[in-house]
Length: 255
Image 1 (cartoon, rainbow, N blue to C red):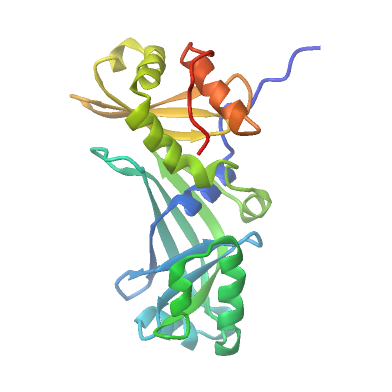
Image 2 (tube, rainbow, N blue to C red):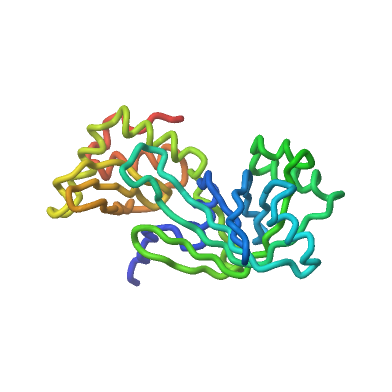
């Protein structure tokens, strides 16, 4: 019996989930008005997104006037790399659907529910100049240097962010500042055309690691898959060091 081919990258739905978790910037676009920045955004497991906007914003007023059916809207989220790169944007996510007002009596309860998974300090402003809206998602698209892909809402409901999502920024910063030797070893896997540029660790997940090469001809991203998905911190550190060809070195510290 042939051996199963290992998964080399997260699914599109997992990428959307992780990018939404990483994204620090989000704007709500509605027809006829300027995009409205959201101070808090949270993609719930049920497949909708909770958004915090100024209570007096046109977006909040339109959502309130739209009734139970809501108003068409798109939430755009930007995932920035945690390193000072020439091009800091790693991915963009567009969540399209119907934005609905959340009743005043349910605002604080919903804020508490969101805080359980995402204890954002902006949630403290709900009811004090900030209101929550709910985007019932009908489609999702994620775009990065490899192109754009869509995902169904059903797949999005079943997906989880990468298990190392919350720690990824600290790990990448640690690799960049304290493990230039490992980054240099990883760069040896790059094809010849990408060997002449500044190499940065761009992303890491349970399936592999992505390098960003800033070259004279522009920026290029190159993914290095692990031999097998990492299930815990020790396995992730071992996978990175094995890729670097130095399995006995002290690789990523536990953070």
